Length: 281
Image 1 (cartoon, rainbow, N blue to C red):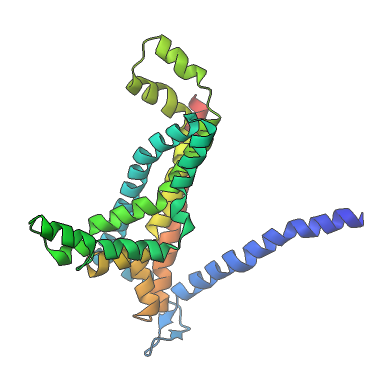
Image 2 (cartoon, rainbow, N blue to C red):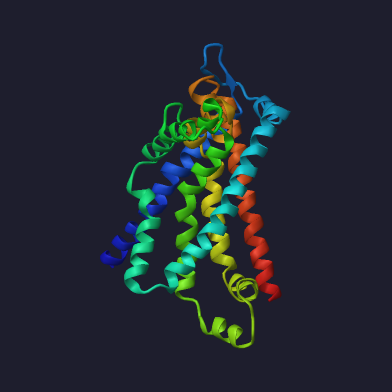
């Protein structure tokens, strides 16, 4: 009996941790979002929905839309790149498979800030890319080259690509390849095999990969700040600036709550769409 009670208490530790360090701070943010900013950057305990009304200003809605679009584009690009990489790894011999997975996981071997700074130095004002373009006589704007939305898009795709590869690799490793052989015997082309055989059986891992890329990309602020500068303002940068620069914690909390609500709704839409598709099939 004592042993079972001890196991029950040990099983509650993750729940206690979840309540204390996840739901607790989220509740604090939700409470702060309905308060008022003080004259010197503090928080005044007077309830108001002004922060949420302010969040629907067209300027902030444009920033949120830009963040959603860039996150979706990053997810789609990671899916297009990650699928053939996962396919190559799953169908490769064991030694080559280990090498492919090692190359995919290389970004995790160094700190995110170090990787982004390396990319910033590469495309910087006096960086190697600028030197090569000058040497070949190719005209370019050194200021636009080092800070732009395309560079932010590239940085986010390279950073979150492993989050797409690993779920697909796990699914392809357990895939029944007799279906592919049967499709080939029936005269199916490579495109038909991908669209009619592989993708229908890989919808769930593909959706998982999209969620794993989309959610952190939507709240990303380090990559846009270092690679986009003042040219690129995303939701993560907007929320960070409210806390650290403007010292408007209530408004920053309101933006964070709205971002969390959108992410939850996005997950629910995908969940119910997948569930409905499963019931129809």
